[in-house]
Length: 296
Image (cartoon, one colour):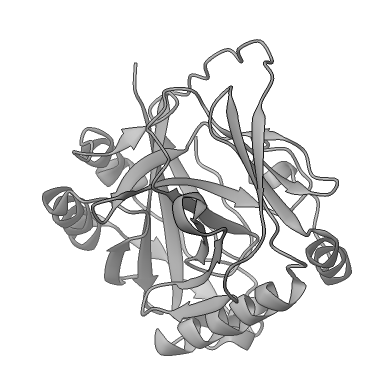
């Protein structure tokens, strides 16, 4: 299945999708944690991340919201020494008023010697997960700003018995800082944010059939997926002639051989129609590739 998303053009290579049936609802013990730090912005060379800690001592939980390109989606990572890898698909919700969403693409990872992080892609958009990008109605800046202002906490249900409510406070100011960071990131890549925001056409693959199968046949070692699917995200910089300039894996993957192999395939074989600016001229841009692996 190939899907293109405006302001971030994402193509998704899917082997198969299989979602586990939801278990019967059970009584969940919820911990509510207040912030124990201010928001901190990480200006990385490949992404932007907001971080904040909640609670103290054995109850300490840290939260990270990371974006790799302009758009509404970000990678949520919640870390705690108390987390244990689960096979149950977790759920999350931005409160008040957000839908409780199953996160079938969630994955666990170790951060240091005593912290386990649970990561999943999410958004403040009210649209339910699972809808294709083309089916989503445009989200105006006014609607986005209102939702960011009204959302004041994040609920993560790790298991059928445990959940944590992180009192984030309003998210409009932090997310405004995130967007400024993303604009700086585009500039660092040699892309004009204003031009990128008004493209008439995004970069599109010309020969995806040539490199899709070799990519789909490789699975990264050490990626513990919670549901039956795992997603790995790559970013390519594409020049004005449609040639890839650089490749980077975006989601945390510890298998360096996998990263080198996939980026090698993309750099050697991928060809693109370049992005076009408002005047119809080809310009440098980026392309996000989501590779979704089904685990049977």
